[in-house]
Amino acid sequence: MSVQRSDVAIIGAGPVGLFAVFECGMLKLSCQVVDALDIAGGQCAALYPEKPIYDIPGHPRIGAMELIEKLQEQAAPFDPVYHLGQRVEALTRVGEDWELTTSTGAKLQARAVIIAAGVGAFGPNRPPLARLDEFEGRSVHYLVKRREDFRGKRVVIAGGGDSAVDWALSLADIARVMVVHRRDKFRAAPESAARLKALADAGTIEMVVPYQLDALDGANGQIDAVIVKTLDGQARRLEADALLAFFGLAMNLGPIASWGLNLERNHIVVDQATCATSAPGIFAIGDIAHYKAKLKLILSGFAEAASAAHAIFPLARPGEALHFEYSTSKGVPAA
Image 1: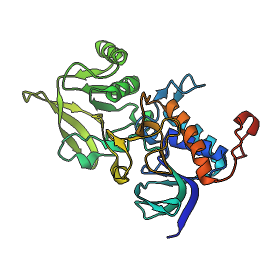
Image 2 (image 1 turned 120 degrees about the horizontal axis):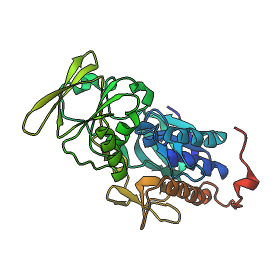
Image 3 (image 1 turned 180 degrees about the horizontal axis):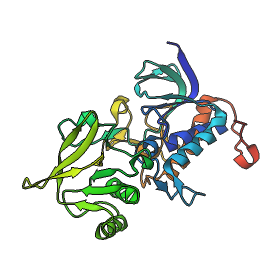
Image 4 (image 1 turned 90 degrees about the vertical axis):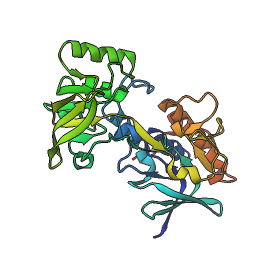
């Protein structure tokens, strides 16, 4: 398999990784992007594609997936090469370049690497239920890709955090929603929890507390009911078409942890001014990057992408002067 080369290799196709393509492109640096998910967007695409985001400058409200689509459109004029559905397993030095080997065996070389991997590899915490794998992806879900998929259905939502409460609120007007939680207090934002209680008091949704998931009933990938029990063993059968289980994410750095970078509590320590890591030519931006007073916001990651791109330029173009220009005067190439 031939080695594919670019100026910069970006690990992570979430919003910050996608904006890094744009920032590098404005400096005429070519990019390849690797992501373990089979679509771009990171957590925005995988966990809350239809949820609104309110803190993106210039957008009082924008859907998570809409933001990803706009970032891809913004990056498109610079012809990034995407390697989706594969993760970087090894990162080794080859001369002045870095070589990345992915889980499919692909080899990429770049003068610099930007790690924009969010919180690293992540997956759902699955409830310990027999036969769970029979229903996963068909009638048991850990994320909602399309709200409309649940219109008119009987939906059991299990969990007590923001995801469980937010989706209960979102689906309440199109589905019959039953919320299962082991206690009557929720860890979600107080305003959201108050709205949930108001809907329950009005009879719009049903609160099934204090109960825990116990078993699934159904066949051929389709559940017919969710069996729940109290802590003292009192069982109840909830007729249902779908179970949304929101028990958080299991997160780990995966192979990143073995690359010899300076880590602090599973985050990569960087220089705040340049986002450079402890390894020459490797940079980290977004949620995975750590420095004093770090704010884990998408907009912070956008600024870090710009800082990293400018720090990479002299590495990719040694001896070439960088003439800083604003996009208003420089423009962008036609897509």
